[in-house]
Image 1 (cartoon, rainbow, N blue to C red):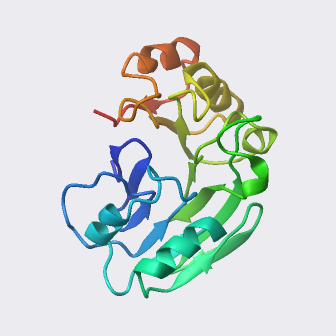
Image 2: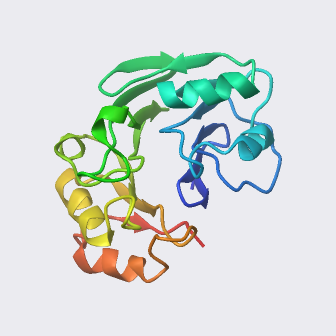
Length: 205
């Protein structure tokens, strides 16, 4: 498995591409690129970023995140907004809006999720979002979908999204770590609604 979840939505692919590092304990300082979906504390964690970054690390982030990163680091920053595409260090990425319906993460704030293409495989990291029309239109190989509820879609909607997209692999995120999100029991709820033909992995402890 070339995908690791430190916790929550703190994801790493190929030991060099990080997404929303949070509560990281080790200090590998091996990040080539750090993608940030938005600036909330559990997605933009300065202490964890310092542990995985180095002088050459590039940040890809939203406007709200850029303001915080600029105050703490001198590294190159690539600014993104919803519905755009680009490439950084050979990794092609696309963004889409990540939002809740009427609470917490409002669409007008410009928070994002990412689909990145690494070594020919498309990975989608949803960010903090409900099951939206934009998500339902995504094409991807590996779907990392939040199932914690409250701040994101819950386990049932996470499974519904996977059933719509039909990825080659689905991995549940954003649960069993911070107050207000579901515990490990969300995994059983997720499997209850997930199409049995879709392969899945649980990487959160």
